[in-house]
Length: 437
Image 1: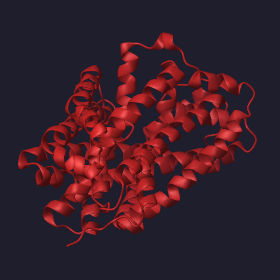
Image 2: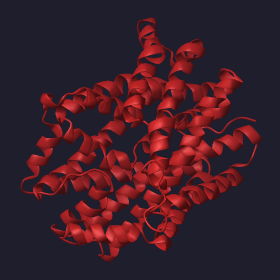
Image 3: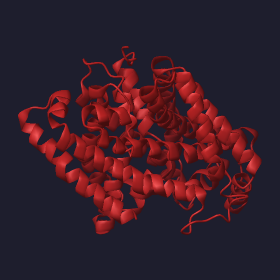
Image 4: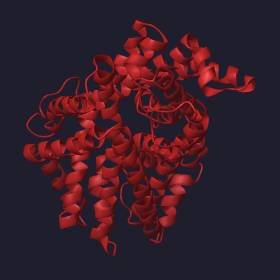
């Protein structure tokens, strides 16, 4: 039976960019850049992304297209059964990430509703911190929004590649960029906004340290969602006439552009009001509402901001569900609707302890981490790097002739790309793995 294909090259690019653009692109990248030398970090990150990062992205897409199946089946079909372990690690990683990511997506959905009714509008960060703490510790609300976000993801993926994933990418990604550009325009007009732009873009080479280089390496590899196998699943729906290098360049460019635009959206506003540019939920749920409360039409801007976050979370969760669901579809012949429904039920159940980690299960800790943090640490710091190393070695050592044929590499580039797969990527990702552990 022939495999479903993307309806257009644009559809693949937008869906893939949606997979790589997540909440981390909006709340983590700007903070990490500003705290690690601004423009100096950005230059190093761009260099690594458009060499090592894009090489791994190309590897996953090429493996998917060559095998025409998801990660687990692809490694076995192109290599041998023992290489399935890399695919299994990716699927497990995707499952864990989706389980806790849907909890965070649920928080974003909840805050969108709170922005619409005005509950997040406050000048007091301490009051907003209490609001956030009360929300995430409330078991009913956390589980309800976790279920709703998982259900939204299910609806998209259940509709299939063209009618679900591709259509969602074509709608959500342009809307995300429009909302972001609108918020940037408002942010840059604030008095004192230039300090935020300077913090983000002005090079400070005194902050170039080994730790900063490892931080840039980690972002370069994993901001493109390589290591879990999401792009293997997406690549499996590409036709033979698609030019992989051009598509990967577009995906990488859009992902990087989104991260930089997120910085231009957030940092000028943060610095204009003298607030703490912390990363993560603190920035998103406790700091940005203070900014919006100072602005005309602040409630509408807050709603637009949380809608933007929700769309970024949804496009990423769609790729995670596809990664995991394609396993029973390919391996056991399960229908798409049944597979996606089953996986979402399992994800919801696995996400319940994560959703309750800040409430009833706050005291359950292992190695000093609650369930949510443990799932995040295991997936992000162990499984994802191991998947990246395995994918690079597989591409360079096991199926290099297939890779070269898929990528249509000229002789001048082939040796350099193979060096990345065989040596540079495994060694450098290994450094990131050891550093983060």
